[in-house]
Every structure is written in C-alpha cells, then in structure tokens.
Image (cartoon, rainbow, N blue to C red; front, side, top):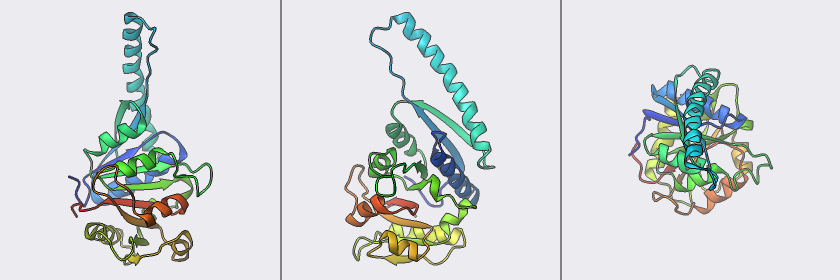
Length: 242
C-alpha cells in the first residue's frame, strides 16, 4: 500500500518532451521527500511466427544487449534533467501494462502526456488515461507545455476538485500535505471546477480522487477536466494512506 510522504517514486520515460518534463517533476518530488527515484522505459518486442528456434535465441540475445544499452541511455538522459539518481527499469510489453505493474511497488507515479492534438484531445487514447483509470497509487500527469522554470512550482498553488459536495478525506489530506511540503498556498476546494476557473485562480496543480478499485469510473467532474483542462493533475485513489 502506498503512503505519504512517498519513499519510492516512479517516472515513466519514453524520451519525449513530455516524459522529460515528468522526470524533472519526479526529481523535484524525490528531492523534497528524500525518496528513491526509478525510471521505467517499456518496449514491446514481437517475434514473427515464422522465426526458427535459433533465430528466436539470437533475437533474445540482442534484446538483452538492447536492454543494457537502454538502461545506460536512460541514466544519462535523466542525469541532464535532475540531480537525483534514477534507477533504470527496462521492461518488455505494452507501456500501459508495464507502468501499472511497476507502479504497484511504488508510492507515487509521475507520467507525461503529449497533447499533440490540442487540450480537448490530449487525454483520449493515451497511456496516461489507461494508467489513471487503473492505478492503485497516486499519479501526477504533466505535459511538456506545462513546464515551469522550476518543477517544484507545480505544488505551490493546488486546487482540490470535489465531485459535488463530496471529497475523499484521504485525497484532501494528501493535497494539504503536498502544499505544505512545498511551502505553497493553502489548498482551495472547488466543486464546479472548469478550465477557466482553474486558470483564473492561477492553479499550478489540480487534485482529484479516482476510484479505489482499478478500472472504476472516474467522477463526472474528473472526466470533464481530464478532457478539457491543460493544468497538471494529481489523481489520488480513494481511501489511501496519508
């Protein structure tokens, strides 16, 4: 079970601009909480059905070498983004499943998403969407375009998004503790948050709950925000430990 403050932080890395920003944000969190930081890179290897046994063995040997190269590259890539040492985790398979599996062994996940088709489409069909809907640990989602001069600035102005008049107590405690840790402003609760209201309040991070059970349905307000809002978001599973 994840806890706060986090002691094990995972960041998903695909070497794009969004994941590079995610590494910076994860590094800022790891530095503040003296947490271990791991970077996960996933690649899917499909073996053609007509390969012989010898060809498969040769391909597996190449894969081992490729993993070692990827681990070295990930460490070098991350060293340019954060002074915090990053433990490389290289795995096979679809990115969504790999991230979710690795996240189970961490207290917090940071993931980037690109948004190449505009704010209303950045969420749809992405790995981030799959992860948030199925996560059992808190997830910070950022985009390359969200990048401030200092990654820690994301936690200075936090807005807590409630589903109607209801808010999970654990999520509220998490948001409050996070703001205090980064010496931010007091957390403000919003029951009818929109892109416009978040920007008007100069929000640097929106925090909302997700169902405790993986695959559960997001609240109506969370569903709307993830499809329309460009502000970074933190999703906290209900009834978490804080």
